[in-house]
Length: 417
Image (cartoon, rainbow, N blue to C red):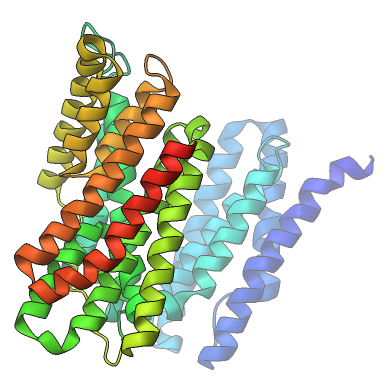
């Protein structure tokens, strides 16, 4: 017998001690008696390891019988203690069974690390009971729950079922790849929405602009323009929120490029970084000069994830992908530039994903970089137009003072490089 043979049992003891410590702390915190504490959970995990070891000699049936017997023992133990405790601690009963199984996993060389990782996750889940319960009760609405389920459907159900081979003669419409980008963009919006729900916009319009920009900088511009039209007194705050949201768009596009085609990242970094810096500096100077942010106005972000808009984005992305390819075939680089400008009128994410994908195979990376930059500039000018159309002339003029230098700075950098 050597030390290696005792390692699984030592790991099982540590797993039981980890989970048992949390359970013992919970009993002390609730000031109640429980069926199992620190010592019991250590023994439970060790029992699982011993059962798995004996199963190697007596067959898999022994392990199944041991687990079934232990599950019955736990059920009887916690049920019989219900009268004394006044309740059935079902979470503790499940934790006991899980600890037994983790002890069994620790007995095998190829699953010993998995057992430790799962033990840490189980302990974290048990230890964050108050936080998770409070969050679900205070923040999680029925809409949020449905959005989470929708996110899981498109990412974990639909995506694996899609074919990974382009059916079109040009070889650009890969269903699984298109759907992956739908998942990516939806996830960015979903995460941004959740952060807004948790933190709120009252801590400052800068936070509102950044988080709103994660969902949709165009939506922020529209909301602020409408707010200004109804309440002209918040024009300075609305300008700041709109500019910050628009500046957030540039890092968002860089992140998409980094995921889709990282070879384009550094070529886009300089123009996008310059436009972001110019926008932030001008917004800050305007903030100081005009005493902005005297009051915060929260951007009302609605349900960010719905199946129909996600499908529309997928169709639009496929259209842009195909249009960019055909424009490049029949009109060369000029066709790609035109397609990027047209696409930027509606959405910058789709053309970014499309061109970054094409740059991996058939499109010149330099053309892709220029086209993505043009799309971002076009989208910025669209938000400027929204400021005039949905807001007021004064609001549009203030936005123009910041947006036009941003676009000019981006053009200058693009020409220089």
